[in-house]
Image 1 (cartoon, helix red, strand yellow):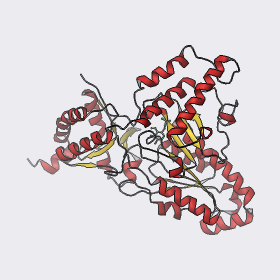
Image 2 (image 1 turned 90 degrees about the vertical axis):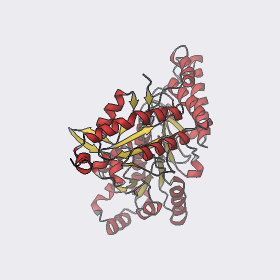
Image 3 (image 1 turned 45 degrees about the vertical axis):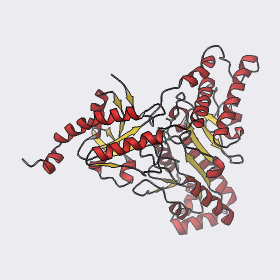
Length: 420
Ligand code: PLP
């Protein structure tokens, strides 16, 4: 039976080209890049070539790219180190009394707790790599504003600007949401923050989580006016366990992992040479091709909405990731649907997760105002460059009888539509 892998937002298969590029560094070229002899210098050269390749894909300088273990580490590093360094700077550069008074007056933050100030602006639909890091920072005394989003998942740039306080250190808004695919107005927020800095002298760092967007849509750090950007290799047919953090030149970002002098002293730990080389090869390929993904996505959306009753699309209908489809099927339960799809070799993801025995709807669907009972019936299908129109046609054909069957056995559906 044919496999239909429709969960590319979770991870992607390693491409043949990336594997080929990695093979020497998994076998004969095993040198530690920190050593001075030839083996080490060849590994170091491979890392630097990869850094140049990656930098080109986002309009950055190679010296602004730091390799990490993936999106989670990049997000943690960007948020935690910015906030810790920023708070130290706040306490040095602003008059403690004046800062305390200003923050006190406007935000009722206790004067005694000046060292507890330091503010981050993010939004309610970020990935947990951001949200849980923010929760950790809250425990360390930082304040976090979680902006709401509209019913398609957009963050409002006006709301970002309105949330700024004298002690705001960082704004972190994702390029594209991992569940519903909606693209956020990053360039507009970046431009507004830059204007704010020019007018007031308050320089707020701007981080974006581009894990789902990188190599799927064009990204240029200067056009977006971001200071920090996270990306991960396994979302673009590269290996798992490797990513990067872009850090704009001049941004003070203390190290997050302490140890050796790797990554110019900013990210300790022996480099994952094979992973970095595979990531760069995958990025080079993914950024260089114009895939048919958005046409396949639109065909899939159309068929689902037209042919399956009581189905609605989540997220922005057009301004969304080219590979993302997220729908709610009313009167069914997504987790059961996933299991039945699995039997047909269709691999996808639901918008609710079984946590401690009860189904918890996703924070993203809740934030865009989807009713809990509808969120339970949501399904995310994320395609890849190899997914064809024929594949999605077969998926819809296999899915239709499953959904019809689930509805027939659903008490809510029966009560509503089957009277006898
Ligand atoms: N941020 C977003 C938007 C993601 O979708 C993911 C993973 O799904 C991550 C961060 C975490 O990335 P990684 O799996 O590389 O740690």
